[in-house]
Image (cartoon, rainbow, N blue to C red):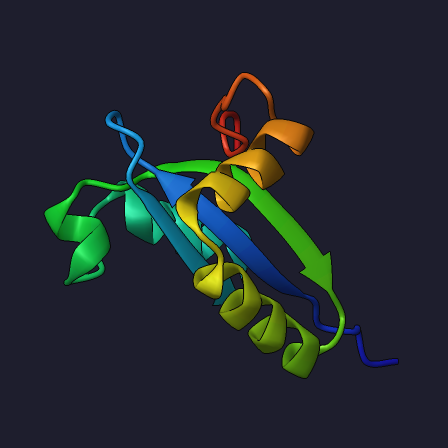
Length: 96
């Protein structure tokens, strides 16, 4: 039996609160890449490495659409989403 693949839309941040929204099919691997600054570009430049929000779906199209939706939001709305699920903004990947 084939195991169903899940997809994740996530938000990571840094010490100064810069936000990055992404999508992946392997959240643990992707967050580790961010923590080790292996991904060139925005997240490496701004040292974004703390997972503060994620949601899961079995549908890749839905994940990509949700990522686009969240990216279009104003910063304040993204912060409200994080505050709703993770009010202390703790690193959700601690202990992985």
